[in-house]
Amino acid sequence: MQMDDMILVSIDDHMVEPPDMYENHVPEKFREFAPKVSRNDAGVDEWEFQGERTSTPFGMAATVGWPKEEWGFNPGAYSELRPGCFDVHERVRDMDANGVLASMNFPTMAGFNARTFTEAGDKEIALVMLRAYNDWAIDEWCGSYPDRFIPLGLVPMWDVDLAVEEIHRLAKKGCRSISFLETPHVQGFPSFLSGHWDPMFAALCDENMVLSLHIGAGFEVIQRPAEAPIDHLMVLACQISAITAQDLLFGPTLRKFPDLKVALSEGGIGWIPFYFDRIDRHFQNQTWLHGDDDFGGKLPSEVFREHILACFITDPSGLLLRDRIGIDLIAWECDYPHTDTTWPESPEFAWKEFQEAGCSRVEIDKITFENACRFFDWDPFARTAREDATVGALRARATDVDVSRMPRSEWKTQNEAVGFGVL
Image (cartoon, rainbow, N blue to C red; front, side, top):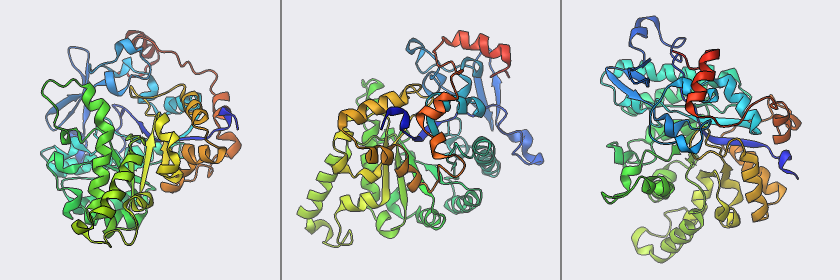
């Protein structure tokens, strides 16, 4: 096997929602209330919804086309971005240039837990806009290239019964997963252990959909020193995935719902072998705490493997311990267009780590696409022949894609000349 023979499916990327996303998906009587983008006097594009104005920190969330010197938390304008951040046709070209066959995209404007709608005052309008958001994401973004995107939706966290309704509605549209808070209790919602979310879990099981829990919304679970730099959050974020796993595993959730599938998005894999050692030893040694049959005659690590898929961008230590983790629960991600992405050299990064870890072709195929496609029940070859799905084949049709980085000012000049990102 050579690098160009790999098939890459990323289960963690992001889209920067375009300003016109609501034009085709909001009922006429609600259109005046739809979220809108306007450019303020400082040249920053802001979303406005129910009187609240928010600017996207493009300096973190959409840096894929910029030199590192321009990364930061600063907001900006759509015209300063690489168009693949917000234009689905350009995204597919960028995927081709990176040798990536398919991608699952998490929200930006809406938040991983539909925060924009959850925090809105008028929940009737918020629900209309959340559903319109899902219709855009599934019908328009993913629907434009059903061979290239795994559909992901959002649910209204403020009402679990409405969340159940939305899951069933999304399933009929072909949605394969919902994005949700990894530690809902730190945001003031009931915890996974509380039983509050059980109807939602049941609906996910009924529809064979995955609960995707992305890092980043549970930072408050870490009590940092007041003097701690932002590095603390960015480095320790993956450790929150272990806390999430603990809530699901040692709470009642996975025992109540034996068919529930959970994806820990962007949490990495290197922490898993230690976590397995710890929970299995704890379970066997501290039987007085829980009884011998809490896990149905299995070790906690075995139950984890039955329910949870973990993914990584780069994780050389984790790959060396892949046999301790379980090769069937490891998946790969690209994280386009965030600062952590390996675009446009994702195949080179992944191939180098696979070679250093001594991975076989069978193992590489499982990690790069088979595990993800099985878990999300998405057929990568339904519309694409296998020989056309490889890194080499995709890159061969994208030789005209310029993957160089440019200052945001240059992007602005270039994009405005052709109409990209112009309000």
